[in-house]
Image 1 (spheres, one colour):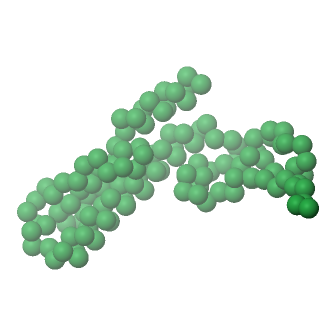
Image 2 (cartoon, one colour):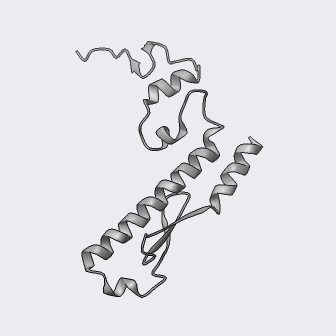
Image 3 (cartoon, helix red, strand yellow):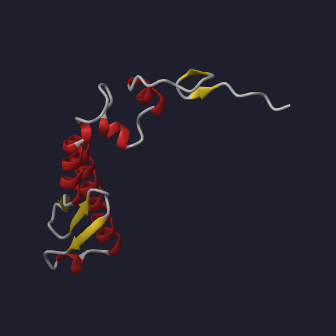
Length: 123
């Protein structure tokens, strides 16, 4: 538990930054994926069309979030059950019943398959 707490604490102050190819825009996000900084390091953004600037901003924010997601998955992945890919779990690409099945926990009475319980018919 102490290692897990330490890993969580390290994520509290963690940030990831992405910079556009032309260096016109940079974005920094925290471990929750929240935008904490948006910068325009040069004056190049002034010559960009609104749609181009918007696209550049969205791109750097998305790349920073993806980098942070990978960082969080790497940091917390060692605490996941064996065979569970933390990046997939964080991005909603995992079957929760499969993950719970890997934990080898007892399931509630009347449950024959993880995630599926027998329900009495309404009558």
